[in-house]
Every structure is written in C-alpha cells, then in structure tokens.
Length: 638
Image (cartoon, rainbow, N blue to C red):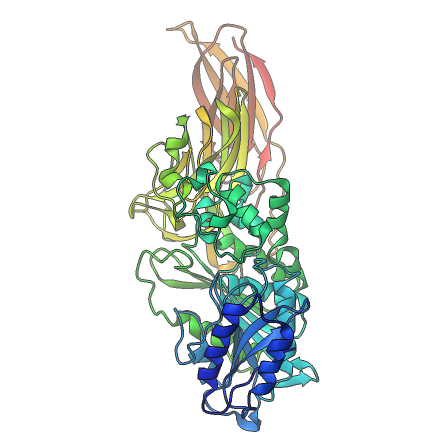
C-alpha cells in the first residue's frame, strides 16, 4: 500500500503537483518509485488533507484524496464517507462546496465526517484500464481503499482494520457503492444516486441497444457515421478504456453486439450481488433519467427489501437528463442523504429518515408512501389499432438522442383520464397483436406514453418491444419503464407505438407492420397503503360464448355476439377479445359489469357463411386479481 503525504501548510500544492506528475508518467513510473516519493514527503498532522496512492490487489496504483472534518471531532476520530465520482471524472477535490444538488464534500465535512474521494481505475491519476465498475476490478479497488482508511489516524474504527465507512456518489460513483457494500461487510451505509443495478436492462433493454447513451459514454457521438459502423477502436474515449469496453462501444453503436460483448455487459455492475448487501441503503433515482431509469432503483430496492435490509427509495425529477420543470428546493437530496448517514453511519437512532418511499410527480410536488410498490387501486386502460411503415427515417436523431419525444409515425391508444385526482406510479403495460413483413424480419417497435397537456413523453422514456415481421400473426406483451405522475379528470394521456426512438439504436429494418390490437394500461395506486407482499389471486378462467347471424340488409356481413362470464369478486376491469378470421385478427375491448360479472361485445364482420372464427378472451386483471386468458373457442359463422 502506497501513501504519499504532504507537509503541513503545503498539502494541496504538493498533492496537486504529485497527481499531475503521476498522470503524465503513470504508465512509465514504477510502484517502487511511487513508494520513494511517499517516503520523501514529510508527515502531516491528522487534521490536514492529503493525497495518496493505494496499491490495489493487482498492484495498480489508485489515487485517493483524504479530507478531515471542518471542525476537529471530539476524540480526534470520525466516521469516513467515500464519495464516488461520475464517469469519467476523477475524484472530487473541491472541499469547500457541494457539486450539484447531491450531498457533497462541504456538507459532509461540515457535519463532522472524514471524506475520501478517489480517481477510479484508468481515470485521472490512477493507473490501469477502465473496467467500468467491474466487481473483479473496481470492486476490489474499493476494498483496498477501505484498508487504507483503516490506517488513517482520523478514522473511527469499529474493530482493528474495520473503519466506520459510509459511501455516497452519483452515477458511476453510485453503482460502485452497491458493489463495494456487497463485497465488503465493513461498509456500514450507502447512498447511491442514479446508479445501475443491471447494465443489461439499462443499456440493452429487451435486446435493443441504447445508442443515445452508449455513444457519448464512448466518445462516439461526435464520430461521423459511427452508427453505420464506420468508427474504430482508436476513436473510443477515454483512451484508457479496456479492449473489451472498446469492443462493446463499437459493436453497440451499430446495433450488433456479439455474444462476448453481451456477456461483458451482464458482468459489469452489481447484478445479483445486490442480494448480498446488508448495509442500510438510501437509493436516489431520477424520474427523467433515460440512461439509468427508475426500474434500476426498483430492482435494487426490491432485493434489499426482500432481505430485510433497512432501505429507502427517493424518485426525484432529474438524473442524467435535467428536470423539465422547477423541481423545488435543490438541497432536498443533500438533506436526505445526510440524515441517512447520521442515522446509520453515526448510529444516531434519534434521526428521522422519513418514509420508505418518496417521489416527485410531474407537478413537482413531493409525495410519500409507506413502501414500494404502493397498493394498486385500478388502471387507465385503452385499446387501439393501425398500421406503420418501418424504416431508418423513423429513428429520431439517428438513435443519438437523450430523451424520447412525441412521434409523428405512430399507432395511438387514447387512455381515459382518472375520475379523481390520482397517483400514477409504477410500470405501465402494453400488449400487441400484430402481423407484418420487413427485412430483416427481427426488429423493434417502441412504446411510450404521451402527456398531451404538457406535450411530452412521460419521463422521456421509450420501451423497446421485440417483433418478428415474417408475415405471421404474433403477439408481444411487456411492462414499460416505470413512471411517477399525478393525474386527474382533465388529464390527457395516449400510448404511442412507433418504429423508432431517439434513445435507441437506428431502425435497420424496412417494411410494414399492422397492429390489430394495442392494449395499454397505466397503474393507479393508493399512496397511503403498501403493495409489498400483496399477492393478487388467480381468477377462474373466463368462459366465452360466441353466436352469429347473417345481416338481413347485407348478406355478406355477419353479426357476431361475444360474451364472457367471469364469476369473480371484485368484478372490475376489462376483457380483450381477439377474433381471428381467415384474413386477419380483430381486437376489441369491453368492460366488466356486475350481477352477474360479465362482458359483452357485438361486432359486424364480412364473412362467408361457414367461415371459421377463433375467439380468445383475456381478462386484463384488477387490483386484486391477476390477468387470465380463456381457452380458444372455434365457431363457424352462420
């Protein structure tokens, strides 16, 4: 372990110079030379700031920056907070200010904490290649940094070699907290902000690559025709990116990830390691963050909650994409983070950290609930149909945008407004019945929810729906990215199905898709009740009845009556009918009515006498009952 200390009164000057020398010659200077520099520097008093190089598990020098509290604590020791930096920034050194609206060095030092920041592997003055928050590399670097803290005279220890450690930080510096806490039980509390739980679902949801974010992460958004595959490894930035990361960048921006690159993405970040975390965790995630969306926080919170780890989740307006309205007091997050550390790191049981779930809806108001998920009370449901042409021209900004906007080429589903002021919090849902032809046949369409009042896509989020356009009738069903909204009788929402999204890879297929039925729903919740552990019951299978008779005025048409009985309570929700004829499917929606619980729909179809009809009915579920599909019924038209 290497430790460079500066003389009293000159610590910042010597520290900065030392870091610059290392940054210039880090690939040429040996570890032994760094040790000699450390020995040449004079010792310092515990209150002074200093820089050092920590030798990681493989000998890679990691630059760290240690700062004591603003006021010397009683007893001379204090808990230490490691503050991670966003990608690809070195460790923060502005000790007298908080950068952004998050908890930062000035707040932490003023509250009596030691603070340590560091230059992640391959960034700033640290040597090595960027492995992108790999548990096998950056995760083990974090463990070496905790070892370093244990040797500092200002550090409060719980046992020899076990310092009292908390963590804070944003994005890349948020994700490393999950990894460090999972791998090192000495980490006592963490406050990850807009980090990722799964890089696969963040950058490659459903198989579609999020080029709008991968390209700038790799410095390829400024390389002409990178999405057409005309970039090379020398154009990937930073230059210290590992060869595997460069391959992911080049393959990803052209939408052609190899098996090896897909595995690399899956292996980077915490993933299943979150289930090993036992440190109390405050998760903060942005409602307008289209890089690491709310589902990243939701997944992590669910894993912690299942293991009874003290956890809190905050959804705020902002993230990697700025809030599009006045989000209120910018210090809200800093106060929440500091309260969390005071409660769990300082172990002050008198500190109130607030309810387990707090969020900011589209009206900027802060709301709170007893847990997540919140108790469901219904859904806003709608159904639509239409056809779309598919081509590269349907990809806004050629897939290099940061947020989705309302689409011009889209099949739309009008969604009803809530009958009363209601919270719309959680994952919308979509189901498509479609047929089409395109080359290549395998491609994506995208689902997004538009708020017509504000002329915006909720959260700026689009969700990929994988489709196969080979001329056969098919269906696809997916939850969409989570949202947090407040709606009322005047709200105007619509679901759009579109061939392209600004944040996702260039549309590389050309053809046409007919969407016979697009069913969409938005979740309504009761913010005063927890939905955790709430298990919806499985209803009986819907019983379908189909009758038909010839239209007297036009013998080519048949009048078809569709009926469903569903003897369940509560009798709420809707039924979606799919009527398959020889030519095409037809999709209809009908609401359930009570006494008895049933739904009915009368339709008129152009059918030859004796033509076969295949009818399937799907109960779309309600707050207490799961969705259920009927058996398919076949009838000959009269």
